[in-house]
Length: 74
Image 1: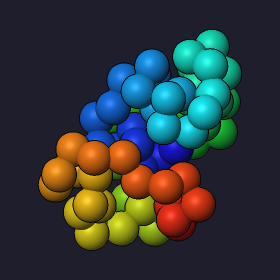
Image 2: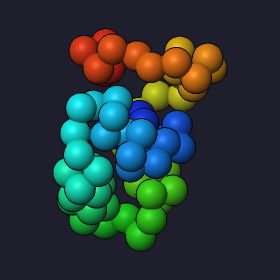
Image 3: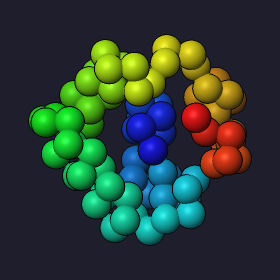
């Protein structure tokens, strides 16, 4: 989910990608923000990169705009 947030996807698209409802995605995003003490989605991404939860490698979907299989996500 962090990778999709970092790629700038809205909750609806994240839900479609991960087969979750938009409500569930919103709940997860809120919990991630709370756990990281983040003020915004951008802040979540910044913290995630700094802590090594995300790498700077660009995903295939970010380059092509195509979906990746959720199983392939790190």
